[in-house]
Amino acid sequence: MSEPDGENDASLQAQRAFFGRRKGHKLRAHQADLIAHLLPGLSLDILSPQPGRLTELFGAPVDAVRLEIGFGGGEHLIAEAQAFPDTGFIGCEPYVNGMAKILTLIEANNIQNIRLFAGDAAELLAWVPANSLTRIDLIHPDPWPKRRHWKRRFVQDAMIAAMARALKTDGEFRFVSDIADYCAWTLSHFMRASDFVWTAERVSDWREPWRDYTMTRYGRKAMREGRTAAYLIFRKTG
Image 1 (cartoon, rainbow, N blue to C red):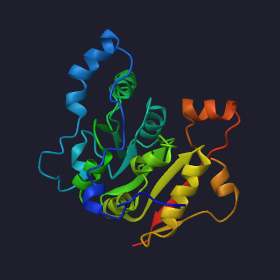
Image 2: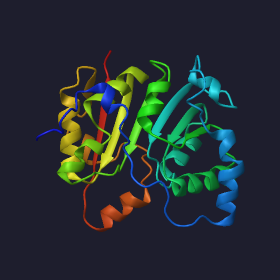
Image 3: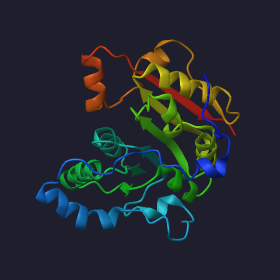
């Protein structure tokens, strides 16, 4: 598979935006209120000095921090935060409507261990301290199927290097997609990355969701329409 020109130019790649439009349908009144009043208290300010430890960003004590990139409606991120109350979660989502949806869920469930970033995950990864995350999830990302748009895919050599810097040793990057081409793209990029190994030992390790996986609305739709997802886990080795 061919790669976009200049993919290995890390300085250029780090500045690329991996998302398109930021806003969809008009927000409801309560959603707009949450954006105005709840979001500021949960938002990460990457223009501020880098924290010594990411665990310090959370109101409740946490002993580890995970990141979900492009959380969409927030179903998976909310479920994980509830299942692991001693872990802090950072959700990165540039779309206002997705941010409004997760704020509604955070308020309704009084969740204390989530912080949010409404921007480019590349900038967030550059801001977090090295060796500070235990896991990064990318679930059903935009596949950017047209060849001229491949440079917009999140999985690129420079982003893999950025994740390797941010993850602790034995930390994981987990990827889910029902788009075969993007799964092949992701595998090819990670198989040549010296800092990661693919953890699959048998077919079921990548054809079936990992234990306690929360299926998203998009995932359920894909299943109804006969599209099979791959569930890929890569572990940082050094």
